[in-house]
Image (cartoon, rainbow, N blue to C red; front, side, top):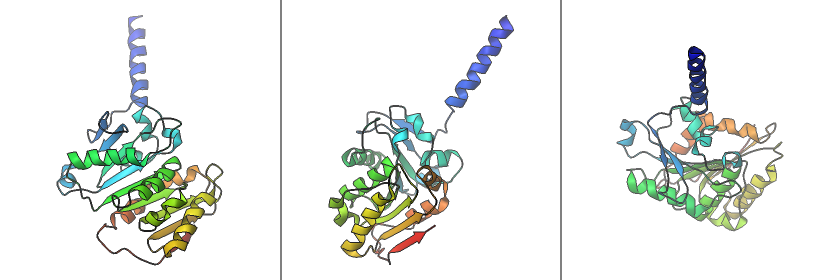
Length: 246
C-alpha cells in the first residue's frame, strides 16, 4: 500500500509538471505594475547590455483570461520556449475573456518596461494575431509615434486610424479561407492605406489556402522577426508597396 501511494504521488507530480512546466528564469510574471498583467521575457545578458529592442505580443481571444500561462500555447513566448532565438525583450500582456485590447492599457505595459529596463526606443515592435491583430491595428493607430513597425495577422481596424497607420511600417497577413475573421477585414485596411498615401510603408501578404489558425505558424518563422528588426524609427523606410500572394 505504501509503494502504491508513492507511485500515485510520483505520477501526479509528472502530470503537474506537464501542465505547469518549469520555465526559464528569463520569463517573469509582472502583476499589478501596469493596466494588464503580462509575461516579460528578458534575453541573455549580452543582449540586455546593448539596449535591446522590444516586441509586444498581442494574443488572440483563445488565450484571453486570467492565467498568464495560457500565453505559452502559441505565439512569441512559445516560439522562444521551443528554441527560436529572439534577441529582444518581449512583453506579452493578457486581456480578460470577452474584452478587446485597449491601446492605452497596452501602452502602460510598454511604459513600465521602458522605465525599468534600458531599451532601444527606436526599435519597438508589435506582433498580434486575430483579436491581437485588431489590437495591433488599434495600438499602432493610437500611438504611431511609440512604435517602429507592426505585424497584424488576420485582424482589422478602424478607418479613422488610417492617417496614423499610413505612417507606420506595417505588415498585414490574412488567409482567404478565414471564416472567423473575414479576409475583407484586412483588405479594407490595406485598401484605405493605399488610397491615403500609396502604401509606401505597407506590406500585404494574402494566403490563398489558409484559414484562420494556420496564420499562427508565422510566429515561429525567423523571417518575421528579421523584418521587424530591419526597421529603425529614425530611418527613412519608404519603399514601394508590397503585395504578396502565397
